[in-house]
Image (cartoon, rainbow, N blue to C red):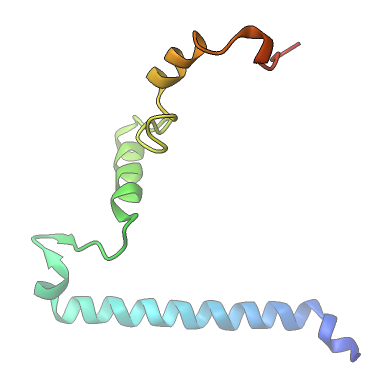
Amino acid sequence: MPRWNYSPWIFILALLVCYAISVNVRYQQFVSWQKNPKAYFVGDRPMMTTLDAPYWLRWAREYNEGIYGKDELRNYPSGSSEFSEKQNDRIPDVFRTKRGK
């Protein structure tokens, strides 16, 4: 097999080409948003085009407000502290993992 198949420089070059194409596509989308804002914005807010956009926007808002922490809205109900507290009484000590010892 040719030695160039395993070259890290070929990989880096391919990675940079993919990155450049991605940046170009996103920039073209941005330009089209600016040309036709009524189709892509509601007031001054961009429309969300993915299902997880509200999740990431909430994280950004909480980070800016300084209240970013454990995300109890994700993996509901098992991710909430209330659920964990209620489950503590239901699981016998025999089946618990010893922590910190």
